[in-house]
Amino acid sequence: MFKNFIYLEWKSFSRSASFGTNIVLKILMAFLVLYFTVVFLAMGVGAFYVLKKMSLEPLATINKFLIYYFFFDLAIRLIFQAIPVVNIKPLLVMNIKKNSIVHFSLWKTFLAFFNLIHVFFFVPFSIVLLIEGYDALGVIAWSLAMFCMIYCNNFLNLLLSNIDKLFTFFLVLVGVLAALQYYQYFDITQHTAPFFQALYQNTIVVIVPFIVFALLYVLTFKFFKNNLFLDAGLSEKHDIARTENLTWLNQFGTLGTFLKNDIKLIRRNKRSKTTILMSFLFLFYGFIFFNSTQPAAMQIFAGIFVSGGFLFVFGQFVPSWDSSYYQLMMTQNIPYRGYLNAKWWLIVIATIISTILASFYIYLGWQFYLLIVVGAIYNIGVNSHLVLLGGAYTKTPIDLTSSKGAFGDKKAFNVSAMLLTLPKIILPVLLYGIGLYFDNTTIGLALVAGAGVLGFIFRNSVFAFIEKKYKSEKYSTIAAYKQKK
Image (cartoon, rainbow, N blue to C red; front, side, top):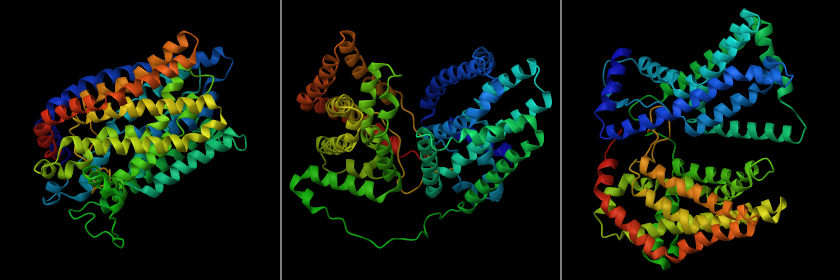
């Protein structure tokens, strides 16, 4: 049965209208896979000798920081790892057991890049431990436990991506632990390091990660099996309907109509509500770069992200948010300029709100908040236009009625849109770097802000160019939105 599933997956991939795009994606991803493979391999081989040179016991030091390793791995998975996709509707009407469908979907994840990449760290590191005379049985038990925990993260990713309460609990837990350790109230490594060390010193302890792995697999299996039916979601509990007229927006004419639609879309759909949460999290991005250990030129990078969370999270999927009724829109007498103008104003308003909310950075110093304000000006004048331009080439439909699950839609990739992200990040860093080259941050800030002001001044010309691109890509976009997979 699994052989047939694999055959169907290959046919689905090769016959898809996006087959050519997927080929380009595979080639680009191959370079990224090769790069990270080399990085992890170098860390796996060199970690022992680097730590030894620092007069640290290698295995004990690694065990101390493993909890952060696994936390970081899970966070990266939640952001980037695509959930396995299986087109279940044709399978459910056939004589195929639900258990087989779910098992196949979960087993697909075992060969995911986010799981296999860790092999290139733990296996070389374990081999070095054996070469250096560590107990063979202990090293093998420790290695097996590491891979169990990697796959525990794999299934936690599936559960956290589908169960909102678990996702919220994880965010709160990590935030509390990080805050407690930062303020030196509680150091979690003092409690986790002995456990990881015991996996080597007392091999019977390895049964603990195996049990956790088995429990998570069963929980994930039951969750997806219980939601594996054709009319999933049709009998959900409905809240009392509320009217949202937003009549005060009528004074803005066509712009107000589009803004009302976008506000209702964000408030009524789970997928779009997530953008608000992600935008809020972007506000704290500055704490990573606003410190002395980061290159000074990268501080403007933080200013761009702190004020542009909504721009990057919501804006990059324009017009995919409207993909379910995009064909209907194109049959109406709707000017592209009005449609794009509404999206632009929504991004601008969100950027201004984010900048105001980020005012707590004044506590760190006025110079940091000034970076955020300048970043906001650049986002409004330049990046807002770039995300809309990228939208002309974004042809991935978004199903607002379904959550992002193991049987839901997959993540998108678009080469043109990816290339348009480069000036969003690189150009302001270069402009700010020019000022730093002359040892004058004021010049750097003025150059970045000036680019934003120029973008605003020439807004009409830029919008005319973007509108032209949307019109030229109109029919290919409609065709792409018809694709179910």
